[in-house]
Image (cartoon, rainbow, N blue to C red; front, side, top):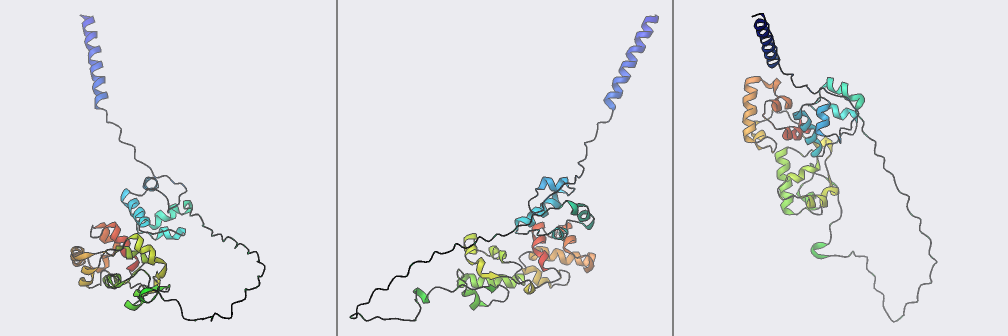
Length: 276
């Protein structure tokens, strides 16, 4: 009888112990801690940005800015990203390393002087005809290379650019009106029919002066202007108007519109140069 009691207690103890082990809470997945390391914001990848403490959405915003032609030339440029808070920049600033690109100018090869040759005597029977008039090719001759400001140029100036004909002249003026002004020459690639090959033909003949960029406030802008703007459109313009009605103009910033899904990350970056 005593042996049966001891056996019963042993079995009960074993079952109780196994039950506790099964009910023990599983360990939660270890959270990824941010790690600090030296990095170049012009080349760092999305995974490394997340290791620095950025969310995937914030990291994608930085990557998209670079893909659109954005470049960080000094540390302070990284702090101007709205996804980088002042506290985060202060934490990362000692680790930002942007290499300095030095331009080296190769020395011009020296020309070895050639011995002067005695000019051959011209026959006296042939009459030499000289002309100071320039060579003229088809349709009035080749265009001279120009350098014009896209925000100041009229149709005559645009036509003078080699590679811009009547169609693109009209398209550029129309797109400039919709934007308010150009912020950089790469926006020409957003015009229908303008591919990389055509852009490469004209990119060295045009520029955008920073003083010519017309800035505006989304909160105070006319709704019709926002509806026609290529980076906003009618749907988002209506959403912005409703946002202002409910939250007030003071809350209508690029950051708040992005966080409330009224603007995409891409359009938020493209609108940034125009904000007052």
